[in-house]
Length: 286
Length: 286
Image (cartoon, rainbow over all chains, first blue to last red; front, side, top):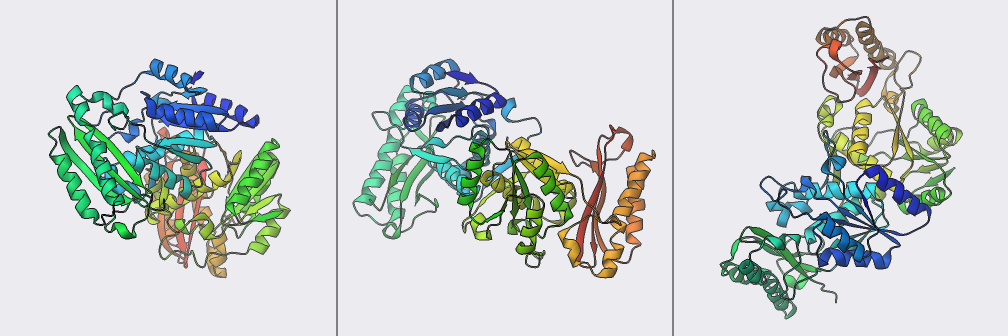
């Protein structure tokens, strides 16, 4: 496995591989890899002949006061894990390689970023869309792999790819969870032991709401209120940004479940000092 | 020469050509071709092995009340001219092929579009950057050809290409002019005969300002005032959006010519009902 720091080197390697007619996979990450990332790597490995992983903590998607500085980084550990899971190349640029001093061009998907996490992290998804487009331009792979845990991010990237005619297939991969249901996240590392124990409530409450819908409850407002009450009753949850029942494609809020299409139930809560997100999807056609 | 209407067909043809190892050129236009466009086509022909021209009147770059509906179109004439000037493929999509009903993703270069034409055409350069990025994604050629008449557009496209790591070489081509100096433009067709005759003042005033700078005049403000007065004295000029002396890269206004780098002198005026733009460049290092 090779670690690449420079854009030009990436381009050269990718062009050579494409000239050989190989199918290329891309797994964009911010590093500090966990089983969720590694499941993306293995999926890419199984579908492609060469796989690039990018490890880049993108400053532009962090807001003031967010955890850019303390975001966990460990390239040595990441490189070993990536190699064990089938990655051929890691692109790990410095911030200055990606954002030149006078950088001033951004991509904005309008609409989708205004709600859910976007409402609480202004500019976050503008930063995400911009860096993902840049990575796609640096490494124009055939397929790129994203996890469903970041559901809104995935929806925005799919919309960007469609609207801007980007010729990369987006592969959605299921959220990987701990035994008690907590979704894997690099930020779980911030949790103190008792916070970690209580964090399992997030998935439990999502599943309860999912079960209510699957068992025929129709009033999204009632299901949402019951979920919020359960979250509020947990002393470790310091803040609830949202607990929403939304259309899985448009991310519009659902009022009447009877007439809804595919549904995503999504939440963002703060446990101790750590903001965590999670979601479950209900495919109505199944 | 082949005329293509569909994105997928474009992709297929381009991929085949790239597999053959051919160098591909791209000439984006809004059609109603004149010698300016054709000079781009011939330049592309001389540098590339296969050349695509796009002909697409991009609705997103027209503001309310602008000339989207009446913008001249003549595909049959354009196709003959393009073929005669070395174009291999014309991509001429319907608007609905480029902008799906729920299109909501845009590219914005911040800063550069706020001045000059951008100040008078809000959203124009957002529309330009977005469609150019889409065309680059549909037809990822090796080189793309743009005229210097649209100087601000060219500056914005170059910035976008740099900031978003787009792997296409931008080739700048000189403005083509009528004998009396009027820059070729599809919009010249709107001019009545006496308006057309008077339109030569635009280039004349630009050249006068250029000569003053080349002969050693240092005060940009004085040169600008003299040029404005000359334009104002012409009865056919109904409006002057701007006559500016700016840095050719940053597009910042120049106060003192002594300390300036490359300079662009640019203007936008309305003759009768027709808004026309033009510019001249002074390369200080030459």
